[in-house]
Image 1 (spheres, helix red, strand yellow):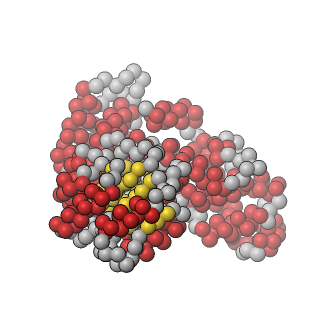
Image 2: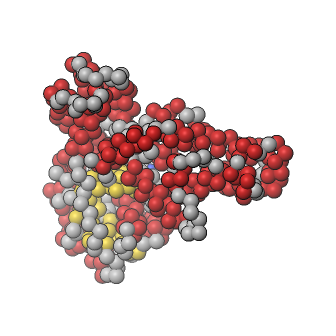
Image 3: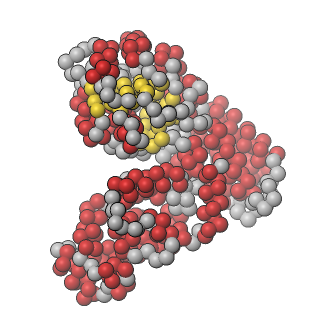
Length: 447
Ligand code: GDP
């Protein structure tokens, strides 16, 4: 995740402030150095880093912590607010009919992002269509078509037509029934003049409501020139940062945002159509600082639960926050998580689990792969209600019976029970945070 190092190194230097009620100059200096180191290693431009650290320093030394606030919370709040300020607002994307043009270099993730965004709009109740005008890259047509099929959204492209401007025009006509049009364009290896001329022509032909620049999170300083060129040509109204799952950098995106005076619209976090998140500055920075991102989490849970479709079942994900965590909860949890995406990403969004706490858990605590989930599911189906509610009652002979019934190894049944125990411990740590912590966290996120 972007600026990942910042989150962990900052947390450890903030931890040295634990218990202090006042900050001395040395503390502030140490924290500022840590922030600068992390931002620079994440490829954030030097000028931006200096600007940010100067304002954090000024506020940390100049502002009195409000009564009852620890030095640690005071600094954390300032860093949080300044970082939110630095990344800026999220690009305004009204949920209404519109045309979006995507620009960027080859390989930046445009085609993938087009399909992901279309999927995202479709989940918001709109009818999107992707128009593929990339006639340059062999395979772009098939790739876009296939991804759109997977996302269950309309698609237009013409592998026999060479003129991208004509494809764009035809595409808008052919997909007139759609309300959000996402126009993908060709990227080249570098910023060649003919690419810029071509995208200007497409821009005039489709007259987009906004043009988004797609940037690979690993791009670094090269982002600046690219952002300027595209901004001059078509006017960049927002940035899509891709491949955040594969890098701890991402500073280039901040440079691009700064250069174009725009903002971040979406984050790409994987290769499938669902791996997209709307950029939310508050949640993004909270997650970065290990405060968790409740909003993203609840959105994912909601989506997953809607897809689970158990109307006659009154199980709620919130229930795991109260009472005991049974195998039934675990089964539901697995079903939902299966639909939410990789567990570590999900856990990262939970306040208190995102930061150091996860590191203290055994590595395999969250290692529930698809195959194991399937086996676990079959095993749980072979258990009685009583066993599901009281996993501790399952002794050796019951393990044998359950394994036989499920057609699985006894070892796998024991693994399931072990896994349940570990998850139960995790949940208990989470519950142990107490109401006060949770409410403070919620407040922080809402402000
Ligand atoms: P384009 O040339 O700009 O259209 O780029 P593509 O959409 O073809 O993406 C280039 C490569 O990056 C493909 O292999 C994609 O699967 C991959 N990719 C795109 N977005 C992401 C992302 O968010 N995460 C990961 N891991 N891979 C991505």
